[in-house]
Image 1 (cartoon, helix red, strand yellow):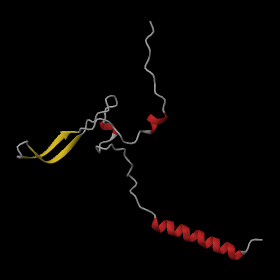
Image 2 (image 1 turned 45 degrees about the horizontal axis):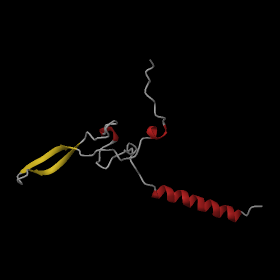
Image 3 (image 1 turned 135 degrees about the vertical axis):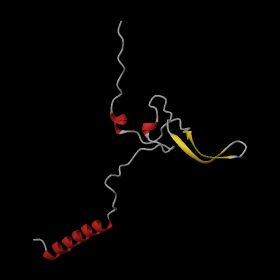
Image 4 (image 1 turned 135 degrees about the horizontal axis):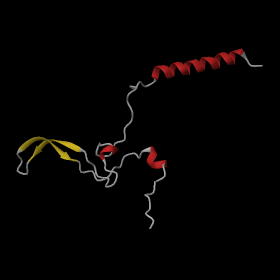
Length: 104
């Protein structure tokens, strides 16, 4: 037969664990979804799937000419040449579809 004191102690520990979990839980907004970003801070959608080059732009603050004259803020093309962020789930587990072969 189970001791009632042991049951009470176990129930108390369980309730303390639930309460501490509720009080210390991290609150995150519901609309926040993780996004995959490359080292250049652009997402996978900015990279060409064939050439792997980035089509995004980066804001250079305090842009200057070769002579040192201040131009201002300037948007320049991103120099990233390959996406190095996390791979999409479909790309990892979906088989690569072969192109149709022409038969003569």
